[in-house]
Length: 244
Image (cartoon, rainbow, N blue to C red; front, side, top):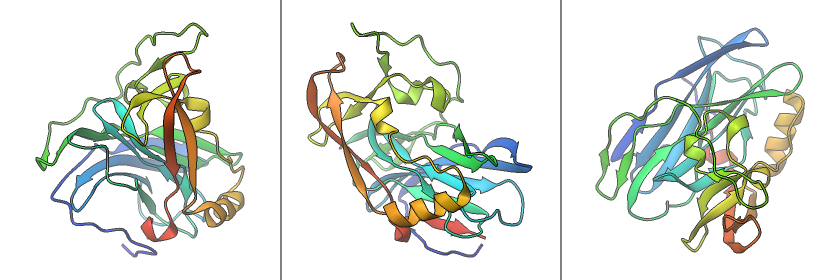
């Protein structure tokens, strides 16, 4: 497998979700998976790939990674896209995690449909116990999303780790502030980023936004009281792995 840009920390403990298979999308079959690793730093990674040999055109693959401590969101990327023909794309979270505890990786991948992109969750990774450097048992599959509780404004709230697809996550997703307090980010704000309509737009977007960070508010369950902020990071080109 050839590499355009690599990010290869040596994992002391790492675990992968099963491959998830989907498609065909615009005549192409795909697969994805989530990885959790604990080495010189703790990170989650999401891999999107063509299910089979050969490459897909530039901009056909997109992915973001999300790291959860317990059931609380610790780190998230914006989407990254392939900058050239590729068979796969792997994207890691940045930063060092949220302290000692049990972590999972649960990411999202995108595939070009001919008219925008189809977003698909990975399966959840097994857990890794950060600082004890051991991998836990395999996580369950997607299962069924719970009946989310609602606040006084009618907004649902809960853990994004329990969502079963990008479309049924709660309105308020439990997350850590940069100061380590637990609150909720608004799903609309977490996902508020440009949505390319074509591979050409995706490649241009990747070039323009790679490495850019974005801060969003973290709220109490009322969706109004601000407790702190959360940083949505976009991996630089040097952190992406594109395979051939």
